[in-house]
Length: 319
Ligand code: DGY
Image 1: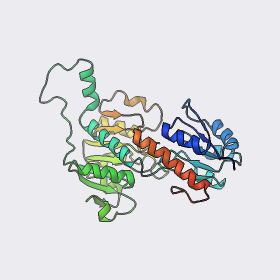
Image 2: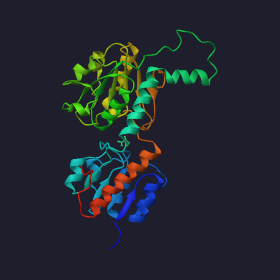
Image 3: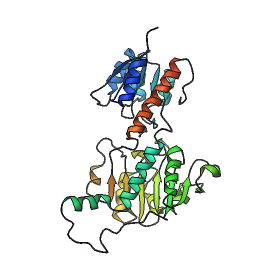
Image 4: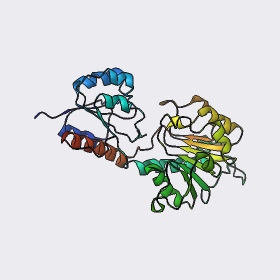
């Protein structure tokens, strides 16, 4: 039997590509440029499987133009907001993702964003780097202390829980909003709120860990920023769509929030040019899962899903 044909849209980890090459008739986009709509449509005629990243957009329009060959989209991401799942389902194309394996790396990065935003990492780095550090002063770069503060987590899924576990190490008083209350042994002693509004009122630090869906678009809007305690810090290592960026800038301008740590933006790549003038926005270029160990694990999880699919089994992460 010929091996299934697989297209890997981006330069994944060496170990992932080596395993894919061994087990599948694989082509890799070593140029590492995001696959365009035309690339995906062409691939649907040539390949049985695609391993894409969140940079490839499987919109309904694109999927409608697919050839019948493609059988499975095995995402190298936990988020699947780049995939129109009903459209893929209607074409009988299986879709999988890579949950669990990136939770710690992403939570770790959210921790970095929280600490960096609270303690002026951007301005501090610039001042040292440019030689503008001329004296020490007790009123210089005074930030907001994370240890012992109240943390609000929106979304206590895998990443939210991994973040809560890390925040425990900082003795934070953890509160969360989630679709449903977690059993106590999974909640890290956190207090459940049955509405976002109730959570926001107590969140000196607010960290978003929910997926981007039509229901969560602009979840942090003007009204909700106003509910936060004055001077709160926003952390977003989930998806840019969750935050109304104009409302974020207004909340910063009036001191409603004192800082933000962002790994994702409404427009990626690029981010929001209006953020560039604000040193109290600590920004990273969507690198939550970017550790060597996690990238290998994501690649292997995508391949595990393919292996199960082509062995006639139900892939572990079938959506
Ligand atoms: C994910 O897996 O969803 C991360 O955002 C990287 O794509």
